[in-house]
Length: 153
Image (cartoon, rainbow, N blue to C red; front, side, top):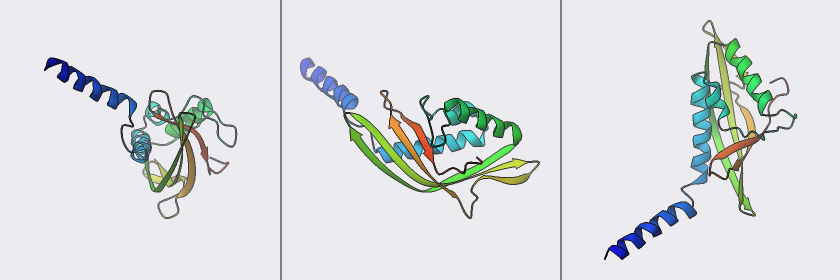
């Protein structure tokens, strides 16, 4: 009887390790929610956590550049408010690597002395972004590219 219990436990552990843990779309949505919440708390490391160290966007910006731009915004504003909507995700897997392309509408407002300033879109007219993510070897989705940002940003 002990042998069967041990075999069942081993089977459950193997299933947990080798089968997908859940809906990838929800995992990707959770990445964006967590980054937005970190931004509202002015937690730079929390905002940067989902970015891959290999990040490179259409303008050639890399991880250190993005971190510096965000730091400058955090220094300039007292508070932030943001949201995203209309999230659609397309996932493909080639040679064991998962990559996702997420399209969403985003707005971010910065507050200075209680005065809101549009940083990225606004509530009535959000900025449409296409974000490419790659699933790391540890099973975590990382942002590798963002498209659709105004060059001024």
